[in-house]
Image 1: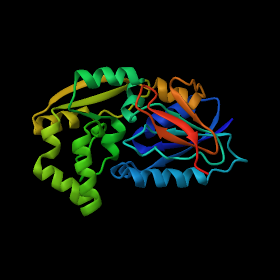
Image 2: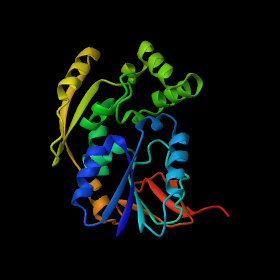
Image 3: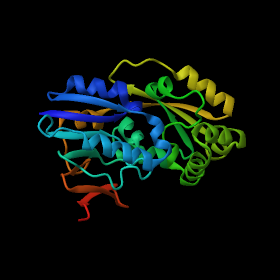
Image 4: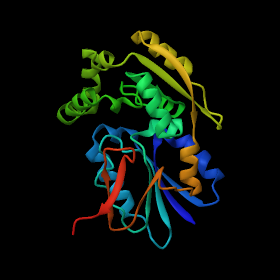
Length: 247
């Protein structure tokens, strides 16, 4: 089977690691993580990439994304089946399961998550870390600023007003088990100290991402979207579902 993988760049190293272990021929296309700032823009770009997939070349498309706010809601499968992890955001993909992410989130609210890929690819002007969408109020405020003033100005305003710091108190570095990645924990420790946050390290597991590349697509962990169907958000453990596109 030949797969087209459309992956957020914060999962770049892990995605290539998983692709190298897959029996399937996989072509990876990375997406700019900055598109998360406005979910509608991310959705539009993903839709464009899906529409460009050649059905004579690929048998399926896989997405290295979670729901990411509402970015995937309304996304349509075009020419080939689309496989999507049932996840709210990429932290689930880093921690290996929805259950593990939920347990950590409940035990440690107000957490910024950092990974090697994020640290080496983040914009030096950006103050937004992984998982920041977990706080709906502050994320909504940030998105309004982005739409009104642009991303760089929004980052500056949020930093000056201390909007992120008021909602967060912990920096958690996810150290991925498996691939040998660059070590950026010293930078995260320094950032936590500067902001007066608690610093913590936890293990990350790429089992969910690996199964995405291996083709182990059970219904409990992965949504299958057939051509002519679209992704819809649901408010239970499934996170996302599929329904027929409007006529």
